[in-house]
Image (cartoon, rainbow, N blue to C red; front, side, top):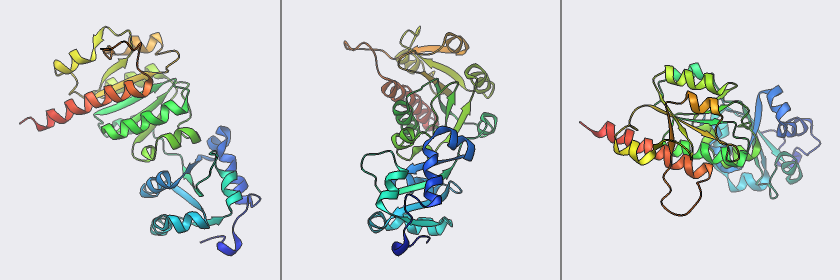
Length: 277
């Protein structure tokens, strides 16, 4: 372990200064690395082979979470002890937890992911708010999706807020960043997935699709930003434009809720199809 409790790295230590720069997107892109903060995210990162480059721990965090040093040692990941002040330099939260990992970018080309024949994929088109994108990552993971695609001018999935909001799910899924939403949808369709665009103005009702057994097929659900929805070109490219029925008086669902309803509807249909003799 580097640094050691007697010689902990401070916020002025060159390694801490270099890692702190990863809080900025341009530096993350340049280095191909990002920061994961907190024991849950770091625990999941360590479980993914090759994801973690270095683990920083305060003495207090090391005592509280001894499993992290054990996991790091097993994975061959160097552990460096840091001061509480250094932890503050590495994190964006008001109360740092003293656990930060420097991680390698995880995204893969869409063509590579599609060779694995995923059956459930979430696509985020120009979703700019990390507090919305992170929970969708977590929901997609919970629903059993195999991949999440960040398409167009979407938020950086390695944004600190997005990583924290994913609660470790970022490390469980295939992650794709694609510059052209319509091209991404064409690739998904070419791989045999039905492309469904979630929109409040869709001509197809989610309940009707479920009742008709249409959700059991391999599916890519497409979600847009809460502020602007999906671009017209994306809506045109989709196989169907689907609305979640509103049975009460609410005007609409937020992105996270809509994604959960749609992804779980597909997950249930696909699971039931596998059970059918």
